[in-house]
Length: 183
Image (tube, rainbow, N blue to C red; front, side):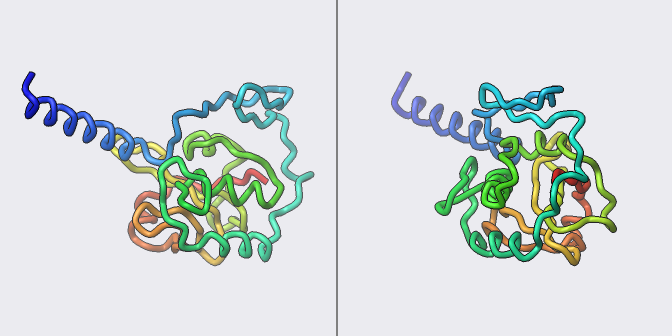
């Protein structure tokens, strides 16, 4: 194989890998999600929430504390698989915020997060609820943010990093998949 063909093959391979990453949304492949168990134990890097989870016993997310933590990360650039100041993706952002709130470590993909908690009607959403969006080729859940109140949510945008957005914008209305309360 000539050097020119090898170079072209490398470029095509890199484009295929990048295309796959973009089409899967905010999913980090090194962590797996297991269905909730009765015991609710954490084992082997999997995150579980017990089926008999009593949401009423857990305190609400304090809105002022939530806003303070989110504000610390505003402007942080988007980085696929990231969970830090140098960059984070949508599920990484949710993990960082909830870890700082001392609530819990969440699964590492938006789709796995969408299986936790219970659904909440948009009109009953409160700060700290998770907001999910569908998209991509298969129209599956591929993005998550944190509801901040007044129709706004915080999330890690691919183009603008961590920002607040309105649920009422045309794009987010079109891709809205639901709100779930985990805490």
